[in-house]
Image (cartoon, rainbow, N blue to C red; front, side, top):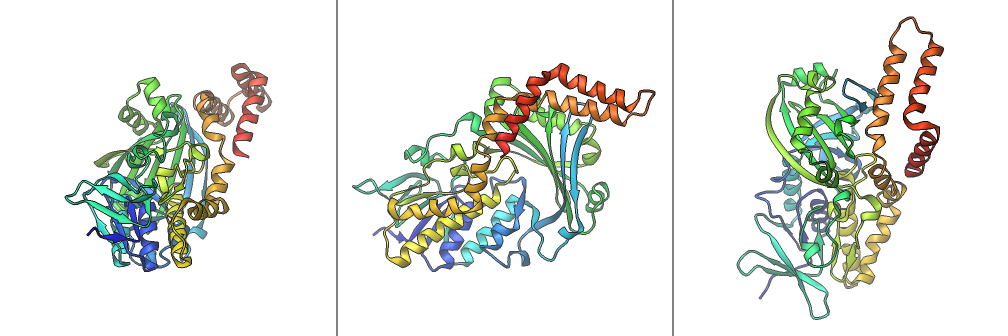
Length: 433
């Protein structure tokens, strides 16, 4: 006789762990299946953890979670080949008792989160691939088929947390394969330095951290960003661009990362570091318009598999954990009310998402991905103009300030014309409203 579970969760990333933990804590019989050697084995890179989303799931997570540094400063750079202009915000108020953002290393964090899932009562099986969804006569999903011997398992609900490039939902016809212009490929390295060196270079003390996010000519006209995250004894350094742009330009991702590391604004920060880890990772960046159908008879989709990433604000883990939690709460509600997990009753998940910040934020920026993809001047022309303007204004010579302002204005008009400048302003205003 096949073993039956109240819920099966496919995937052990932030969304899958959030779903499995919430279900298990509510007393449901949960099976979580991960194809990696262990949860986090496929994610060596650093990341940002947004505390609010995890705190709603595990209020006491700060007691033993593997947190690197709490973020007290955010830097945003607009880079050209010689330097960068930008903005930053730093506040001692971020040294609060319960900080809002942390840097983490995914391999360690995912493993910790999985231990919480198991402690809550879920059965976690690794090194197992779900090859197909098990369907009943009416087409309803009733479980999964795995690559293990006698690997058919049934459940009242299957939650897909398989990531952006997961094939299970695609093969089952639950969602289409994401378009190349809706997915970014990020390449990342871990640069190891002594803790005191990191703190000196970034003006930090104790567990304080800095996040640097950069755009501009470093992506060579492609839509993308670069970043540096400070960990306790390492720096997470990476750059990512749309898969479609990599394909069109034939640019090699690791060469793009090497050029970023050699930039005069970056090299002094990582000089002397030992590079021990390198990884590539796909990130869904299609936003609101790329979200697939999220529920159906016997199934739900959460996390990256549902394209839940806010590219405008570089937020992903908080959306992943929130979608996992809301999916689990929907299943818990149906069980307590004696309702079957059919599409009509699982629509509650989508309704809860619509009421949350997740859909509200993604809907707000729904036009941004397309605007950036079709207007490459934001990654080429404007970084040059902004850098030239800053250099001219800050250089003290024989020219009057009025003359400098005229020269800067002339440079903008000569490059984009008045109509082009106005059009670009309106495009970005509409995309951000």
